[in-house]
Length: 304
Ligand code: GLN
Image 1 (cartoon, protein in one colour):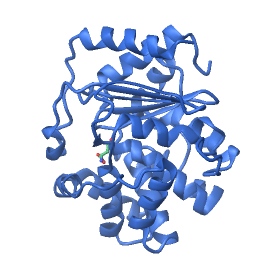
Image 2 (cartoon, protein in one colour):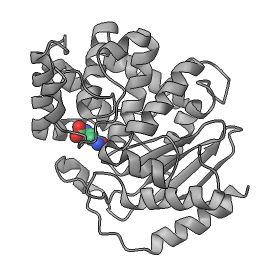
Image 3 (cartoon, helix red, strand yellow):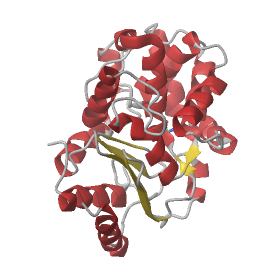
Image 4 (cartoon, rainbow, N blue to C red):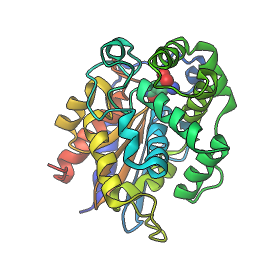
């Protein structure tokens, strides 16, 4: 397969198409980005990589970071995490409060905001200096010491994060948040503020295509069963109420963020990341979704 040629052809086609999407504005700091940035990076499990466009510019990875926090939570507490958060698609927006009342404060999955808040709470209870440990974990997975939180984005979200603050307090009222909501929210806002490039993200998440092992030194990040399960949850819940659509059109497990990034994994083959900040009405990158749909169509490979 000539991946380089497919990426080049599909990139040019999608770049030329107009986009009606909008950059996320509810976190004011995110509005500072150039809305027309567009980058793609692909890394195969033999560590061969291809990139195009703005693949080396750092951007706010937002909810893609929820895959890192889930990986650390799963590694630390094992299957017990599923007592606190479910594995069902929500069919609702990423920041919805709707189902929590009926579900008695147990979020449907770890990739909607409520679920990620519960994972942050678990990490706070399990790990002493969690903000530095989480960063150390991500830097270790990525072999990259430059990865960091963005204080400006974290603060911007904290000052405007009224729904997340409501979600955290609401879950606390059901006793499914054990720490102080302010500490949970601080960790959550920092997690979402991490900045990385498409190339860095695609290399970092390659362990999810490689049975939970880093491809550089074959060291174990997660067991192969944990890896399969994270991929399964990404497949069913990675795009909020557009998860079915992504599965239908792209056919790979993946995770989006409101910074405009999308990660997708082809188990045993590759990890691919797209970045284009203009979002569709569900909060997923418009060009990123279109690129990945054409990419899996032209390579003729998806997990189905
Ligand atoms: N930090 C964002 C929020 O909590 C993340 C949302 C997202 O990327 N979907 O609203």
